[in-house]
Amino acid sequence: MGHGGNVIAELTADHQVEEYFARLQALPVGDKQRRDVLDELTIELVRHSVAEEMYLYPAVREHVPGGGPLADKEIEEHAEVERVLKDLEDVDVDDVRFDALVLKLVTDVTEHVREEEQQLFPSLAQACTPEQLMELGDQVRRAKKVAPTRPHPSAPDTPPGNKLLAPGTGLVDRARDFVTGRGRS
Image (tube, rainbow, N blue to C red):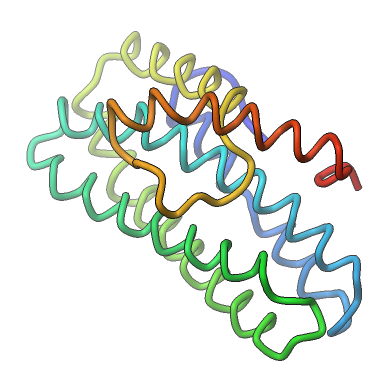
């Protein structure tokens, strides 16, 4: 995932999660490959969310008129998605709750993406210069490289806490992923 360029192009490219949803839903109930696809999706969603929380939403607060409540709403939606991802970590793929949680994840993420692309991104594009959008894109790309890869619902989701803790948590997550082979299917 990722695009390069300005923050809107970068994050819009990340929003192309339908492929993961389709792969996940195409596999039969109980198929162990569903965990691998979910792990890949989780890694991408968590990295994306953390980067948005570190740089996008503070920029929305700073530059977009009325951006504070908009950023708060987006952060709360991230928190809900992260709780669902955390619940999915603890549910086996042949458990009946797995499909219900996947459906909730698909619904929540799809709605969140639609709102960002139709409301937040156009507002940010109007409020920021092209140079500011490019710098935000660079910050988001850097943040995704060090971001956690697993859901941590109790971790801070606003600066400065998230900027201080995310890189260390990300390092631990990537070490766990390396040891277990998670995300390498």
